[in-house]
Image 1 (tube, rainbow, N blue to C red):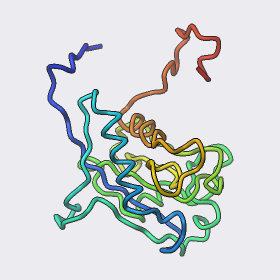
Image 2: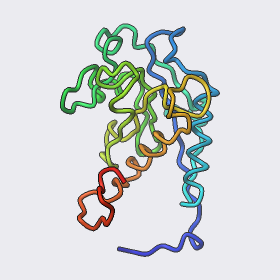
Image 3: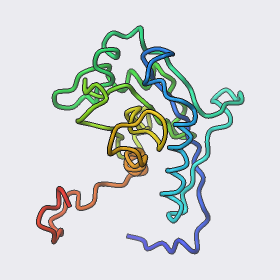
Image 4: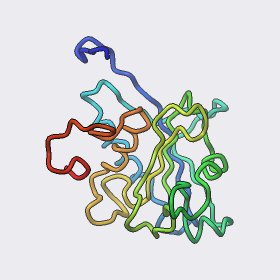
Length: 197
């Protein structure tokens, strides 16, 4: 392992595009730009000391101006309307996340972080269970990205109790940047239960 002195490195800025995959223009899961921007602010606050910062994408893959937010109406997809997106895991239900990412606008993952805001995951109705997920990067395809529920995104707007800090997105961006869970694949933990502490 190489030790890095963060005082000696330049800040890296990574462009993010938020893809809101909703079930209709007037639906609660079609969250506001302000709610998305509040998540963006949390990401920058929480990663500031790591010398990683984020910017909203200002150009789309074709070079056209963008505010870094896209909206995709998936109300045509019955699987998505009823169960949201599937993480393809045990008891998974819904639209395959690879297909959802491709259909809703996967921008080149070598140039952007694709952050998908979804209505539900594995049929959880935006409730308990998986709140978000990301592959440990890079996968070098559209799986490079972050998926989070709409009601855990940001610090204002439509949020569920206990998820008002935007930390689910921070956690998943960490995975996207190749960070494992603390004590993952380790027996070095001295707490009583490494899975919960």
